[in-house]
Image 1 (cartoon, helix red, strand yellow):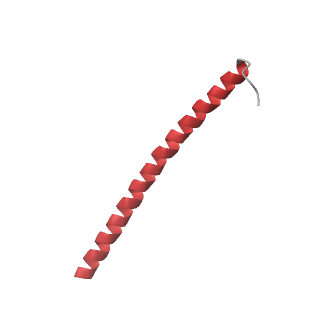
Image 2 (cartoon, one colour):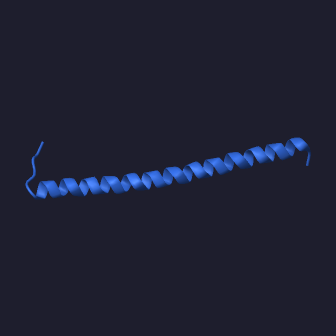
Image 3 (tube, one colour):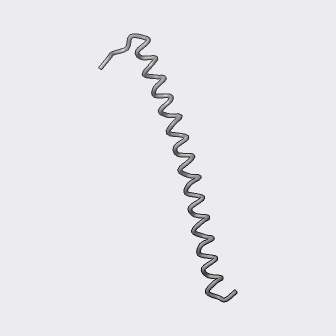
Length: 55
């Protein structure tokens, strides 16, 4: 391999690793947001069932 090919391979490797890490980060964030939405929905349902204020 020539020197240019090594740099090209290294650059693409770093790019793929960063992309994969970012996708993992986004996946965790989405999971956490889904948990929060579920908790908020259950709180609003409890509020409706207990006769809380509407509006």
